[in-house]
Length: 474
Image 1: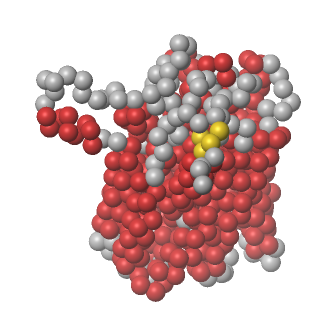
Image 2 (image 1 turned 30 degrees about the vertical axis):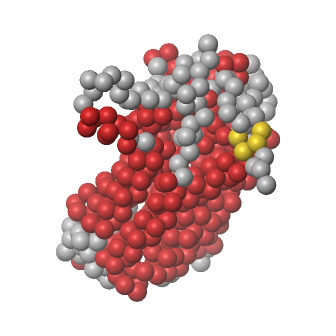
Image 3 (image 1 turned 120 degrees about the vertical axis):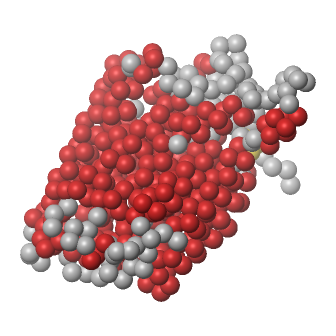
């Protein structure tokens, strides 16, 4: 039975670059499904892992860990901030790598590096012919697997920084961007819903990996957990890496549009108010969004529960977050992506002050645990909004032709924010003798970051409305 195809214009007529959209090859439903599934799994393997690093962090700080010598738990002042930086370095590089990966992918797909003269050396011609998006993604899976394998032989925190932090983050970036960057091009009216489904892979991955990693750490120890996870990453990652889609812009041009997408932010674009507010919002949101996920396991144990319950709460948070991303994307397509983004960010910031901080301040009372559980549920629902909506929002505010450049730069900034937020939070963590009350500084810090991000997203909404004409549904 023949596969049904339809010609789908890349932009809706009300989008800023609709008049410049070239006639692109038709998209089959099967191709759309392949893009959705492969990107979903890629997000699960990259963002999903990063969202459950708190399980590893709690293990490294526990007396039962078998990797670090001397054990952090035996030290007078445990290096919480430095261990948190292992996870945030990986997460930050996963995002920040887009500033370099996206231009490389664009040049490969548009033949910018294809040898055109017979004088080009034979070895260089052969090397350039091998350079394909699939080469980048497969290399990413192999580098990530190598990072986890080498991490299993670590004995010091700096070993973990180089392997589980730097190498794993680098490899994940090489897998993440070639699969995620072209995805919005395959969807139009339901772009936010599609991106919400794809980015729900982060929550789904965290839901699966949190209890699995916790069970492996308890049964076989840290070293074999890392080796087993390396094998899981290899087996699950290679089919996804092989299925990387080609950009619909590759080889397509019009009289008014360049053949190759912009991969660098121009000075004119960088001075726009919408861009400036978007960048600041990305930095603040990424700095604050990971803090609760990083400390869910440890804060749960500080309330008197065991480590397995902490891992289960983190898995539950990821499950709620995954569903929330799909529903938020759906709501954004109907209520306005910018409106929905502002509301979900405001709800996330409010939940930190109203529930997590209240739980910390009431640490000695029976109400502390119910407040904490309510926070996990409400924060998980609201925190998914930004992840689900900002890719579609970038295409809406800046135009699909600028999507690759703006998305890569904003994700680079998000990487910097991630590497900033959790280590500072680790420094704000009080003495272990204080129990749950030691987390007061982290809660204040997290709430302030998310409130700042909300204010900047309001700035984007106002500046975009001023430039294009105000619309209530936007």
